[in-house]
Length: 410
Image (cartoon, rainbow, N blue to C red; front, side, top):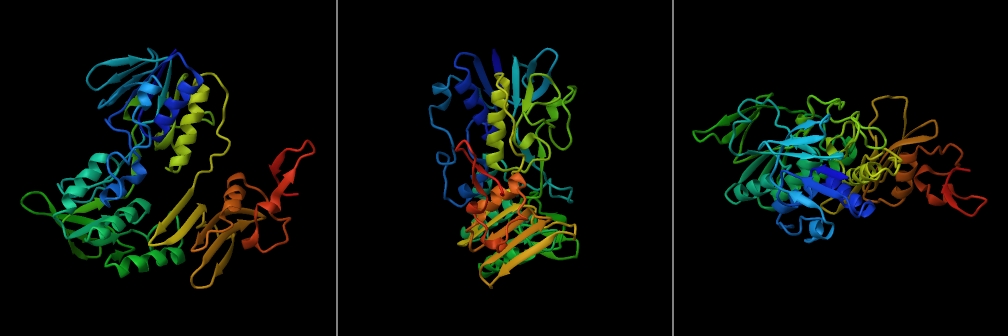
């Protein structure tokens, strides 16, 4: 059996590792554009001087040798020929497979803002090369514009502020971290950022970058006419799946590769996992789970993703812990919103007909564990006569007649 894995991040590495665990003898080859294995979720810590090249890695130095996995570095895939069961690389070489795992992740997208894509000092933060380039320019910069106030954008902004830069954050909606938080909880972080000199421009869009004679963006002009002088621009405003090479196959694609609950695509013997997949939040634990699930099915052991729930974000900017789960900002006004707010501790729970759909806990994250289970499994709570903010595991902890434990409202 020949297993071929494309991609060396969370899904690809854990997929390859699991393949070797389940199949001690077959050939496993991993191909990646990178020549290092590192955690993309920690790239901002490299900019902040809190991690180096060695501590960004999430595998042991002898990982590939110990697991007898051939690693082909610095190679990009140009095409998958599913009928012939081979993958063509950009250099014209090819690799055959019996089972293929696509775990090529996603790339950051730069919006079609005038001169932004041409700017030499305009960066995204998706690869190690991005982090290294930003780090180098920070040493000779005083100001930065961060376009996008989501989690990646704020991670970057915090580290740039820590490095002494004046940072301007441009976000198109009314508050930062709009996918994770609501206006109340986001304002807590906005205040802390502004205390440290950040300028936060919400409900704003970048319209144009002004270039100097060397093609560096020296000013960003917003749609309302605001002009921001800058030494560098970091864009954190969306990603796209790295899957151009599937053209010509029967693999279904809708802003990502579509897979079933076994991580199998519409093509026989081709699986996909991680950020390259459609309609999945790009978080590390889910990518790991998908890589492992795909590996089990590739070796013929039936395994399903038990829950596709993966939208859980934890953050701790400036010593303020916050966890957001599920959908804390439903647009449908038929949902009920329960809020506890004493000025410091803030908790919000979104529920409807006894089912909890989302939650935000800030400054006190106790009891968040049970809500992760409740939301992830869709456990009904309408039979519990108790303050919703005090619900714990004990309220749905049950012993079956055979002595096994389960979580179930009784």
